[in-house]
Length: 197
Image 1 (cartoon, one colour):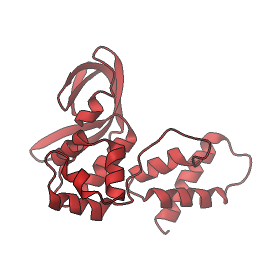
Image 2 (tube, rainbow, N blue to C red; image 1 turned 30 degrees about the horizontal axis):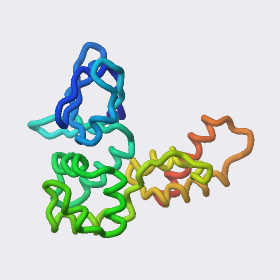
Image 3 (cartoon, one colour; image 1 turned 90 degrees about the vertical axis):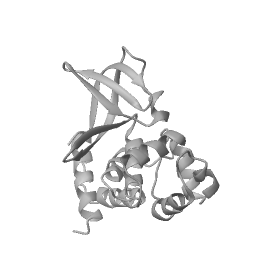
Image 4 (cartoon, rainbow, N blue to C red; image 1 turned 45 degrees about the vertical axis):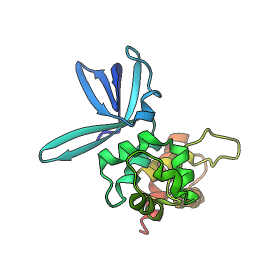
């Protein structure tokens, strides 16, 4: 429903960012570690969003980049971790440290995160090892499909499978397409492959 919001940052509180846009001030819950990645109050900023909606509550969660939102959504898939818990976890460990701890099954590092117990840490390793891909600066050896793969990962697809599907999709494209059309067709065809259609 929402992808992101851009506006003037009016206030930065612990775990909360307030952004004014179009005469409306939005109250957005953000991980503590993300807070310093937003510009100071008075400047324009952008937050990537996720809306939590229940009968009795609506709440916006925000992140400094799409990879942060992806990690948050992956954490929600772990049994026993809700939105509040995911924000707390992300406020106690950097994205890269979290990915490394899961990949290396470093239970001690995960247990050092405030509010994260041994059982939940074990569940996280089982559920998420190899599934988190932190965005890193592009390098000459980076995949040419990084942005599209990141978008597909944000939709819940495995990132490595997404890169493979995009490479396969490129083989089906006719020459002479413009960059925007090429990107659009790659994205659609990759979804077809990933969905097994």
